[in-house]
Length: 443
Ligand code: UDP
Ligand code: UDP
Image (cartoon, rainbow, N blue to C red):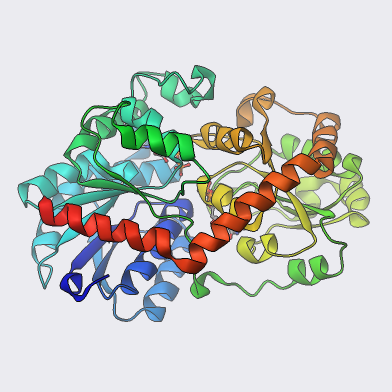
């Protein structure tokens, strides 16, 4: 970009959950590259130690970024009727949003604009509008999800009603109320930044750009694919070492992201499914929503019989792994994923076919992006996470389908190639940021 925009000062306000934090940090790193001054607003207390460690490593690696600590007013989970700790934190931030005003006003040099997480939109826009501060959203999901979000409570004809998470079909839930309020506030924002790219979601991005879907939708800037940072690297070498000794495209990688815990019963069925598939596998087991502390040992979660069966076929871990590194190994030939959006984009970049097993939230809609692109499966018949027990035999059969499907492999290779070209040239992102800067000057 030109030197005329070199003096911008941008604040980033991520929400809670690693899947929301990571895209912020990845975006921040590319904005620094453009010589913009950055302030990262961090919310305290932080829910998981994974997030707090990530924030401190990030800030030590980028000392030029200013940290502003935002101390929220605690919320009683019982009164708020929210059990998920991450959703509770979203609500806490929302209800403390007025406290952002002095924090924003005291920024020096004055802020040029702020980038707000999608889960905080309607509460933060009222603060920034009063301060006449331009506000952009970083939408941490797919363009397909954005199309639903922009119309809600209407549902676009391209999205089956069954793909909406059950919580969104309950009009009395606070989640649905916030979702609706956030959707309604969309037109007051200056733009929507999204970790997607044309070849991944052509139709949806075109539909959003056409303005036919939603009146008053601000411009959408597809800046993806976002790439991981050096600070995200971790030194758990066992899985990588194990993968090095496996044949090309022979291993199924299984992970359900940073905040999805499965029931012990379902974990065991999945284990049997993996064994029955006859394929090698690398499986990250997660039975707690927040972090990994106080977790039972793998022996207790899986049981001795299953552990014995697994021994010769795969590697099971319960620690955080370096997903990006794992996906980049030649041995990995398939990915069983909950279809959190970061995982989807990472799988696309590496060209790994996905067996999509959505558990909650936007994940079914994200899995449909993969299915529509022809590079993976979306297991609708497996229902939503805890509502449904999927038996091992069925899981085993689907893994065979995934690993043996040549057409999906070819489609994947094609998407991976364009994704890599995009990130190599940085052109998509560069041009988009230029357009964003121009739209800012007009506002
Ligand atoms: N991730 C990782 N190691 C793990 C689990 C997750 O590196 O053991 C990363 C993964 O690569 C992705 C992010 O954490 O970038 C999870 O985000 P996603 O949107 O896929 O799912 P969420 O955790 O938000 O449900
Ligand atoms: N969302 C929102 N406002 C809220 C909560 C959620 O707009 O207050 C949207 C947002 O697009 C988010 C999606 O709902 O990505 C799904 O929420 P989920 O609980 O699955 O969180 P995520 O998977 O994004 O971490």
